[in-house]
Image (cartoon, rainbow, N blue to C red; front, side, top):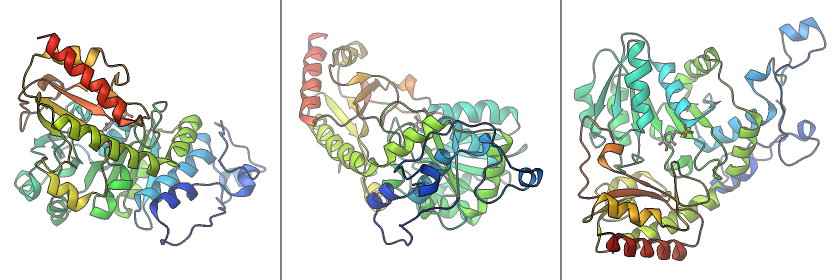
Length: 401
Ligand SMILES: *Cc1c(COP(=O)(O)O)cnc(C)c1O
């Protein structure tokens, strides 16, 4: 597709790239800044010859993309920063991105190694469909690092990383794991939803397929379900083929909203990071709190890894209380005015969910919080208002004793 790309060269900084990449050429958009929302299944051709051999820039069929999904793929590819020959594909959800990427690199008789703190549906897929198709899964301690080598089998086809875990927030030693996997020619997949490629670049760290639940920070407004997969050149063909054979595509509205969200990703992430830390530090100083599970806090056991490898933090973290019952914790949560009770994160509004051991199924290293726990996503509100909301919550916590 002919691009009016004024941003060639790698000198531009991340927020500038977020503004300028994935913009359509003038002819494709009648001059509009944003790509249109093109609803299309059939594309028309002038001749049989054209139909059989679509000219450059023409898409054979709507499932293969529309101007908006192609623009979004370009923007994500740029954000991920993979080498020439990398490919990005969109799928209808973040979960579907994990499943599709796994299908791209596995086959019957194979074996995968998965971080024990992986997003729960990732486990569901490995223990369900993958197993049914003859692929076994081993779950390992997320802090395993180079010790991963001991779990490799001749049949191992992929290593699935997630860092930090979105409930328990252990940071993985990605360079050590990638080195161990590479020494044996095994591809690594990473669910990088927490940091976004703005704050951690999986491909630059040698990961083979970077996965985003764009539903979260890329979309950023709690109104989109979308997943992205970006493969380094060695695995690009397999990813593209699998995506196509599964008949996956992304809707034009979802692509439009995600691309719109990405224009402000840098601003939002900086705010989530700063406000999240402010709320986390306030919580850490509360007498009822045993631990705040936030990698950017000096008290976090993996803080040094986060400092070494990440360029920032999102506003999603865990809190473990040192006292009280689940009922008291629920009283804290139930009366919150600003912080909504609900799954997901990455939107402009703050969210909270309980995180009890039963919400965190693990098999390699059981999670044993000292007391009732919860996860917070700090949105774009003024953190002082969120702290006041939580302070009133602690009053309810004590009244419910
Ligand atoms: C939310 C989430 C997903 C799944 O994204 P959906 O779009 O909701 O399917 C995958 N991984 C992580 C870490 C997530 O937080």
